[in-house]
Image 1 (cartoon, rainbow, N blue to C red):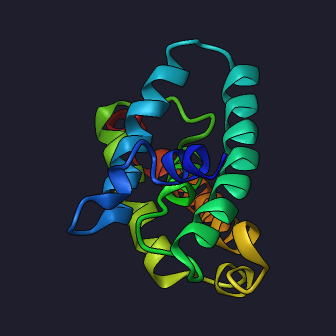
Image 2 (cartoon, rainbow, N blue to C red):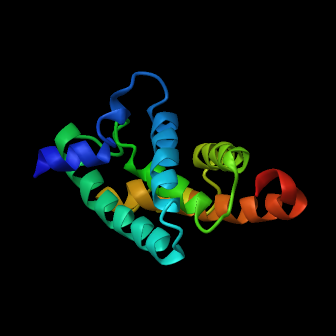
Amino acid sequence: MRRVGVFLATCAYVGYLPIAPGTWGSAAALVIYYVIRRQASSAIELSAIAVIGVVGVWSATEAERHFGRVDPGPVVIDEVVGMLMTLALHPVTIAGALVGFVVFRILDVIKPWPARQLEDLPVGFGIVLDDAMAGVYGNLLLWGLALLLPGWLT
């Protein structure tokens, strides 16, 4: 099961890319977002995020044990969860999704309160929940930007 966990935690090994694995993980989330959004169902979208979040906590825990260190770089399932949360329920265009990508990456780096504190939670919870919190902030910021620029992002 550990191999499955590492496979999922690294988002099918995207996390092994040598430069900026978190950015690549966020980009992979855009593809996942597109597939989920094509279902045209808010219930499916929110359920998918919840399932990916739970699987993310488990797989990140397995990956942490595999790599023998806290929050290993190749683990990018947390970026997938955060990115999906940033875009959740937004009727964005491609430009809006790219703005969401940039917003999430900035928030993932600066980790506003309480995201940084969530990193201290044990194993997979700390790995995933800090990015999930950044995704919540990103979602709120994207709603604000959509209000300011309605024709451009949606």
